[in-house]
Every structure is written in structure tokens, then in C-alpha cells.
Length: 222
Image 1 (cartoon, rainbow, N blue to C red):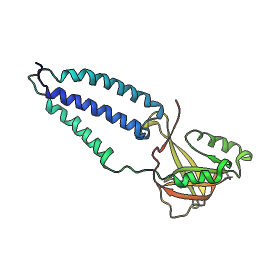
Image 2: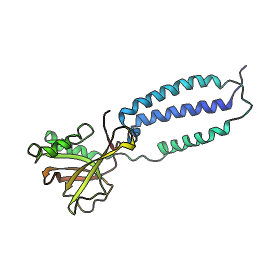
Image 3: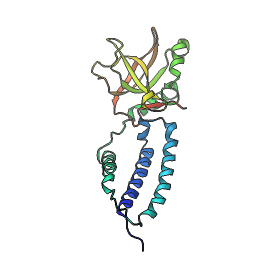
Image 4: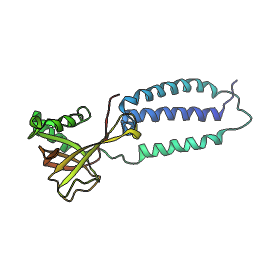
């Protein structure tokens, strides 16, 4: 009759928790705040490999314990998993309030240029083609940057990542017409006319402060 090995059982549970944690990150899409969406394939591979380890580890639960107990060595990783569980399941996760942003899209319908993850590169084209874009309406969701362009000008920023946090860069739009009460770091939805001086800027018609969106980055496709 096989004996019950508590150390191998603990390691079996830890492997399951690790796999479940990765799956949770993928399904919640929170992981895209740290790595590019194109990198998710490696997380799927990790889940597959952990699944293989879990299958083989199950058989080791019913083996003779080694003379040197290793239970205490699992404490650090177990503690980390517990803290992770508290952060993801107990503490409230700020949800996005995109109702006003969606309302702007519906209001302006097909006559609006929407800057999003799929077409943020159009900003370079706007700078180079004044005649084509001047007077058109743009809708953009970003945060108010600490860098100020002037007394009546504000920079609205969204960051782009290609692979991970280390290679992120700012995508910025200069706007005019915001209330002076807005604060640096606040997320804001804006709509306004594309205008030009030295470069293009948005003359804001509508705006609203919003919660941070679920995915705060644009992702460059590799």
C-alpha cells in the first residue's frame, strides 16, 4: 500500500494554484497591463507545461516521504500565492467607466476619428496632412500628463508597449479648452475638432473625467 506524502501534496497544490493564477490573469486581461497581448501565447504554453507537471506530480503524492522534510521550503511561495489571491479576489479592482466614451462614439457616429489600439499610428499622418484632417472631430481616451504645454494647453497621453513595461513609450495629443480644475494623472475622455498651429491639437468640445480603463496601454503588434 502506498504511503501519503504531505510534501508532494503541498507541491501538487502549489502547481495547481500557479496554473490557476496564470489562467485568471489571462481571462481577466489584467496581464496586458504588463506585457503585450502578442506575448500571451507564452502564458498559454506555461499553463500547458504546468498541466503536465501536475499530472506527474499527482502520482508522487502516494510515495514514501524523504528523510529530510522540505515542507518549510514551501512557505515563501505559498505565502506569495496567498497574497496574490487576496489582491485579486478580496481587494476591489477598479473597473472602467467607459459610458461617456461610448456615448461620444455614438453621438458623432461615422464622422469621428477614434484613436484606439488599432489606429493610433494615424496621429503621424494627421500631423503631415493638415488639409485632409483639419476641422474633423477626434475622440480619445487617455490620462492628463504631468508635462504641460502651456497655460491653456494640456497633454493627453496614452502609453504603448511592444513587449513589456521596459519598452513603453508615450503617445500624446495636445488639447485646448479643458477646465483648469483637471489634475495630472486623471483619466479623461475627450471629443473635439482637429486644429493646427505648429502641429495639430484638439479644440475640446466635450470631455469627462473617468476611471482608469481595464487595459491602460496600446499594444504594438509584433
